[in-house]
Image (cartoon, rainbow, N blue to C red):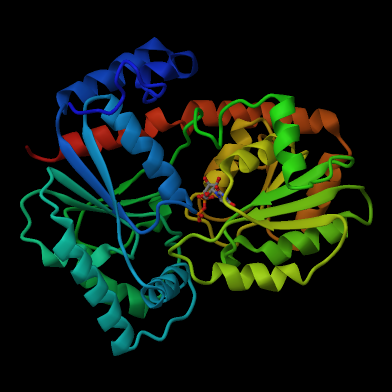
Length: 406
Ligand code: UDP
C-alpha cells in the first residue's frame, strides 16, 4: 500500500498488536476486525498546526496507527498568516467563554484564507475530518461527495452566542459533529457524537525512560533536581492559568521546599503564546523555572520525575497533559473543569481544585506524603490504561466511520 517502512528501514509503525500487553488479545482482535472491514478507505484530517497542542499530538499518532491497520489516513495542515491565526485564536477564546469583536474584516480574512486553502487541498477522500474552528469553513467550498465531520476539541461549556451563531452556518453543513464530552452538546442539526481523546504510550512524550535519560534531559535545561519538582506542561495560554500555578506554588513554598518548572510551547496557530510567556518571564526566582521550548522528551522526563504535576486550567476541552502525567504514575492536581473532571476522580487518582489556595493546599499535602503520591499515581496509571489509550480512540473512530452509509 505504499507504506514507507521497507525491510531495510530502522523504522516501523506502531501497530495495534503492540498494545497487546496493555489492552489484551480480545481488544486487539476486535479492533483489527473493525479496521479490516474498512480497509483501504481514504480518510483525511485537516487541522491548523503540526505541533504544539493536543490535536497535533493526537493526529500524529492516530493517523499512523490507522495506516498500520490498513486505512489510508492522511493529515493536512491549514496554511495561514499570523493575522489569520490571530483571528482564529480570538475565536478559540470566545468559544471557551471569552469576548470577541467579530468585525466584517475578521470574517473576510477568516473565510478567504480558508477558501485559498480549499483551492489547494483537493479533498476527494471517503471521509473528511475537520478539526477545530480554524479550517471549519472548508466544507462550504467543496461539492460534497463523502461525509464531512467537524471534530471540535475545545471546551464548549459556554460558547460566545454571537460567534456560535456565525459559525453555525458552517457547522450545519457537516454530516456529524464530534465533541469531547456530552456536556459540550449544542442545539445544532448534525448528529453529535462524544469521543474523548487518548494518548500513544509509545510516543516520545510517553514512552518509558531510564533514570539516566531523565537526568540527561533535565541537566540539558539546567533544571535543579535537589528538591522535589512541581511541574505544569502547557501551551502559554491564559486558559491554562500559568499565573495561578505560580501563585499556588509561592503559597505552598511557605510550608514545603520544592522547585516549580513551567514548560510551555508556542504553537504555530497560537500568536498569543509569546506574549503570555514574556509576561511570566518577569518572575525571576531561583526556585521557579519557566521554559519555552518544544521538546517532547523533556515533557516526558518532567512528567516522570515530578513529585506533583499541576494542570490548573480554567477551561480545558480534555487535557492530554493530565492523561500523560497520569500514565506515568505521577499524581496530578487539575482544575475542576472540562475534560479534567472526566480523568481525575478527586482524592482517588488525583485531586481537583477550584482556586489557587486549594491548589497550594494539595501541593503541600502531596509533597509531605509519599504514600499518598504513590497510591494516587498507581490508580492514575490504571485509569489511563482502562480508558485513555490510543487504541480506544481508534476504535471509537472506526465505529463512527462504520456508521456512515457506504
Ligand atoms: N505539549 C508539548 N510541549 C509543551 C506543551 C505541551 O509537547 O511545551 C504537548 C503536551 O505534551 C500535550 C499537548 O501538547 O500532548 C497539549 O495537549 P492538551 O490537550 O493538554 O492541551 P491543548 O494544548 O490542546 O489545549
